[in-house]
Image (cartoon, rainbow, N blue to C red; front, side, top):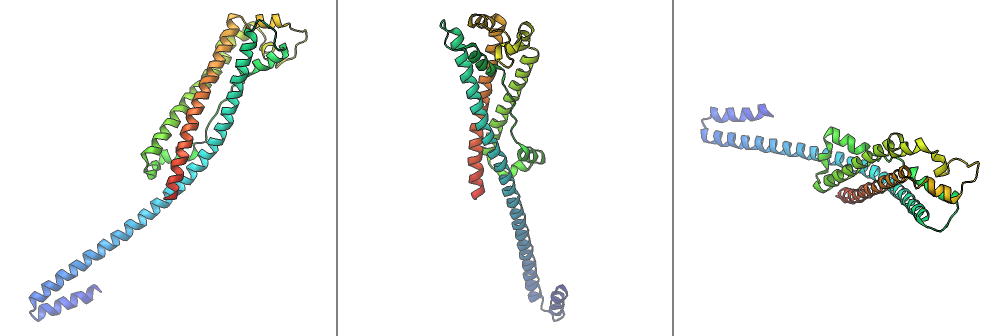
Length: 247
C-alpha cells in the first residue's frame, strides 16, 4: 500500500504537477493521522474494557468477602449482647439484698464475664487489592472512606482482644485467679461442698473480684461498640459495591 502511494506521488512529480502533488501529500498525511487516531481509540477502548472487567471482578470479590463479614458480625453482635445481658443480670442479683436466684444460676451468669472471643473479618480481596494498587479501580471516594472506617474499628477491636488476653493472663483477672479458683465463680467446675449465697456474694464482692468483673464488662462493651461500627461500615460498603456492580 505504501509503495502504491509513493508511485502516485512520483508520477505527479514526474509530470510536473507540483500543486497536485502537495495536495495529495497533505491528504495522505491526514489519512495517516486519522488512521493513528482510530488505532489509539481502539487501543484505549480495549484497555478501558479490560480495566472495567478487572474492576467488576474486584467488586464481586469484595462483595463476597463483606457479605461473609456481615453475617459473622451479626452473629458476634448477638453473642456480645447475650454476654452483656448476663453480666447485668449477675450484677443486679449480687447487689440485691434479697436472694433472687440460686448460686448455681449466679455461677452460670458469671461465666459470661470470661467468655470473650476474638473476631477476625475476611479481608482477603481488600488486602490483595490494596497491596497491588487495584483499589483505585473502584474510583469511589465514598467506598474508600468506608473501608477506612471499617479498618479503624477493626484495629480498635484487635487492641481490645489483646487487652482481654492481657487481663486474663497478667491483669485483673490474673490477680483474681491468684486468690480464688475462677471455677468457683464461673461455674465451670463442680462444687464439692455447697456454697451458700452469702459466701458466694462475699467471694465476688472483694476489691479484686469487682475490678476483674468490671474490667471484663468494659472490654465486652467496647468490643460490641467496635463491632457495631464495623457492621455499619460493612452495610454501607455493600450498598456502594452493589451500586457499582450495576454500572
